[in-house]
Image (tube, rainbow, N blue to C red; front, side, top):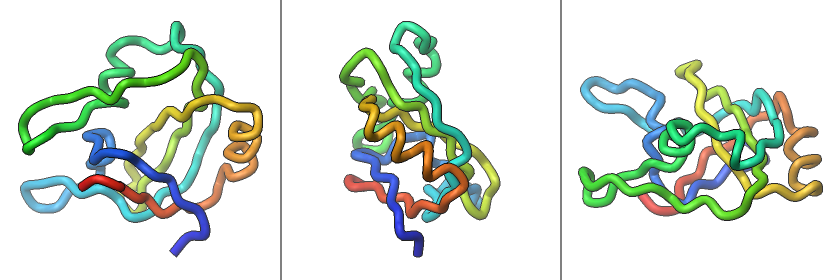
Length: 114
């Protein structure tokens, strides 16, 4: 178990990076590989759709509403699959510095709503 957690409000499609038979599972652990700052205008609409897509009742697509104009872009390596996923977090200088100092560290992946 890692000392750090990366939490998600939904079971986002981007998290399904571990192949299991005919389905995909969300990783339990991930390593933080990179941290950058992005403005909303720099993010392509296809990336925003990828990053915010989740389904309700298993088949109805929904998109999480991003708040703000400036974000912290985190790149994770899912373990043990070796596949990558991203997430955007609201920007603050304090949060940016915190994540920047955690590059290379392991995180438990926690989904609050299954």
